[in-house]
Image 1 (cartoon, rainbow, N blue to C red):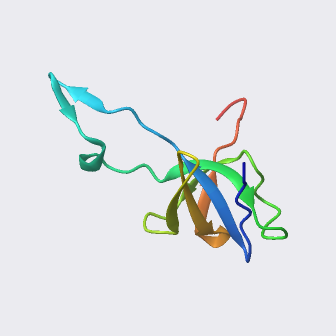
Image 2 (tube, rainbow, N blue to C red; image 1 turned 90 degrees about the horizontal axis):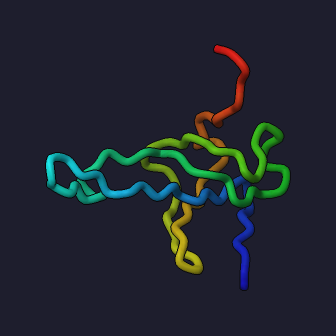
Image 3 (cartoon, rainbow, N blue to C red; image 1 turned 45 degrees about the vertical axis):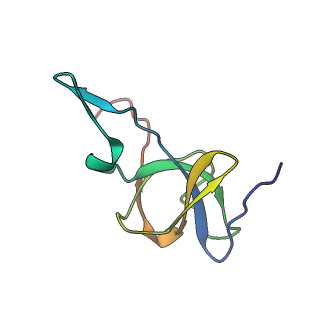
Length: 93
């Protein structure tokens, strides 16, 4: 088993898989749906940022990075600067 370790200020994001949607008996393929630009950080380059950590669920720029497949999973390697936000748990809004 091998792991991917990003370098030079990049992060490895595991893309979230969405089930195909069914509308009125018609299955809408994933390619026709609007893409959600979010995933979970699987690895991050050393010293890239102190705001993000492995396991953070993040939102990234729409056309950022390089999509790869590794051991049956889809990942995106993107510059840390292209990560726009992360999801955080809060008690109240």
